[in-house]
Length: 398
Image (cartoon, rainbow, N blue to C red; front, side, top):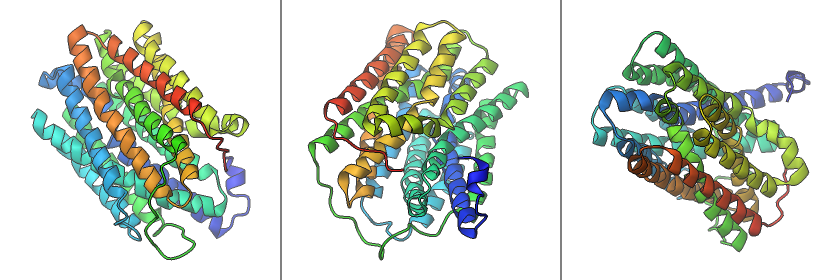
């Protein structure tokens, strides 16, 4: 959406919606771009500094995704009705503290526990800020709010890549990187606290949603969403390590992650015309195929081409597939959208837990990330195929 469209009327309501979109974007940048994905650019330096094997690095990553799974399940229980904003802010504050804790840690078990708790925090922020921000965008008829909100993940990845590049140029270490990430998160939290609306837009008082009705399309979508979690997370966790394994410089590592973030930030927006033309299901499938090509390219093509293509195609697809998959789920379940979001996020979490563990063992066994990445690419193709085979026409409503 252009700036002229956003400010066309100059009304207070338009400014409020814009502020809500900014708050959602920054919340996602902090919780996901920093709290969840900052592990990726810092990982090679941590592995070198602490002597971590790919298997150990995979277990630490999986601990984060296990926490994400637990957080998503907890969010589905309905206990946060009416206090979504408080829970989201709690999750953001916890994210900043846990980023700081990573910079003070050296033990694998301690770091795994920290990342587990960070996963819970990021799931809370994801579920509850999405409930608030997307409800305001829907009520206002502003479809661009969704693009802005989920694009915040890419904004966070971009900011973290730039910060990490500066740390490299300044010859700082991985501990400093975690500390500065915590400080950057605090700046974001201040903005979110100021502009995030107080509650979800509802047609009536807060109440628990009815139980999900599990139809065949919903079961297929949830299964595919979990497999997608496995497929994308291998490259999202080890992309920078793949660069180092191939002999790339530290500055090139940061550059690859920067390309990933720059592709991710506007990804939901630039896929919108395709969604309007082909529908959500087909775009989900196309996204999985495109991402599979990028995952394979990251290990099959030489430096610098392979990792750059892998990063750009990963960034350009994983957020939009995540967002549009959740939108399909919401439209399939009628009166239980938050339960659908939480349960699909839980399936996603299972896939993410398995991904780094499997990838770590395959990397240790083979001495390379090639087999792990090819397994991830296969998972992405399977995910897209399942959704396509069990599709129920779901139009884009925006």
